[in-house]
Image (tube, rainbow, N blue to C red; front, side, top):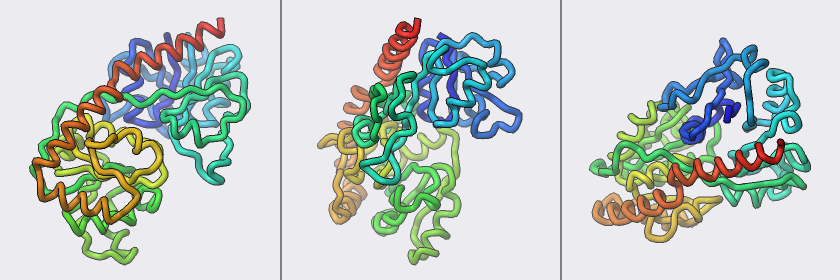
Length: 327
């Protein structure tokens, strides 16, 4: 199939475009949010090709993948076709609902012209989807090229914009863990993190930001840290959590949203009690053998549940079902 989708989430799209189809990725001269084109910091196959809005007008498109509400109108304007009517469409919701949870209505609620697909069962449960047909396709990741070594007595976090998002990403909790071992934070918008923590009343905290490294380099650095912290209070399941588990890295996580499903007993320490999580950080910082045992179980679980082959097979079934139904 020729599948049109925008480059919105780098890690998820990287997995998605490793399928057996041809992926049309819009590009505009400014490479803005609706024309970002191919990824620069992720490895994508040649089957993901950049197309301009002008080229889309005459392009053969079999299916449209939407990920933001405004893409529906944009796709119809660029394609000159009715998305969901002339062309089958699937809307992928990556996020937990915001606002009046659990009464937040999804922007695509009560539609009969598309399939609303969530990346976790938690998200499907908490969004008000109305009468729109829904499905769940859990994440799948490419196996990182590195394995956990944990030789550094430091803790790792991967998150985007922890200063702006603050309590959502659990940034306010970081000083408690940095008191156990130095904390390295990888992602976008992390460069000003030490200053932000100081302004919030936590000066001199041993937190280092590593700004937007290429994925392979970030994996190599994260794998050297003793344990991974997942401090998100209210976000969808981060692909970085699955990636580090696939490396064989032990996880310390808030028992919130989908994390309780992704990290079973023996693969990490989950709790909503901060004392329990801080104690786990002390334990793993001091006992590398224990960290290895948890990480080995994490690798086993993640490879079985979040393998790329399963992810792509699930998506193939979903996309083929939608295109067949529209004929």
